[in-house]
Amino acid sequence: MYAMQYQITLPADYDMDVIRHRVASRGHLLDDFPGLGLKAYGIRERGVDGSPINQYAPFYLWNTLGGMNAFLWGAGFQGIVTDFGRPAVLHWTGVAFEHGAAYGSLPRTATLRTETLPAWADPAPALAAAHDELRDRAALSTVHSAALAIDPRHWELVHFTLWTGEPPRESGERWQVLHLSTPELTALPTGRL
Image: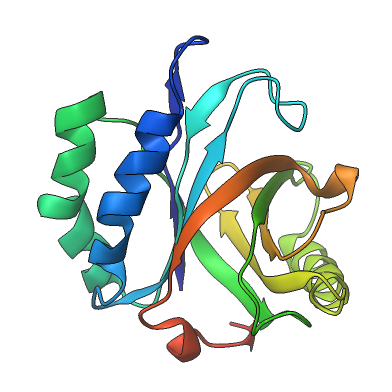
């Protein structure tokens, strides 16, 4: 599993209905994209849920590197580049994925929390503890699914969660989910990878 996100920060006075329309008219195009486990089309709107910015920031979980590459070098990502310029693409190696207690429901919110491992820390116990935390979070009644990934260059853990209800404040940065594409969601391996 590979996790990926790009964050397009928009002007403070940007009409976020433009992004809502974009997702409503184009979001379905990835509903059957090969190699894609899920794509959560997330937005943050200035002044809503404490967000200081307007932002479009989809989050992806890929089943295959080939699927991710086909998207990045193909027409899918080219639409982003054409409309917004080429954003930096954050990507992480998958560590674990769990279906949540609300797996059958549509998520409304996504959260992302990053955690840098101390330079002196052995990553193995830190990953085991983070996986335990992931399993506990997935058991919450409003969790659709949760993923854990790592950037081994910076030793940064990423905790990504989809929520059907209101997430706890300490869950991390929040995005409203406008659409969820899940062509290969059932193929994402669960548990620690």
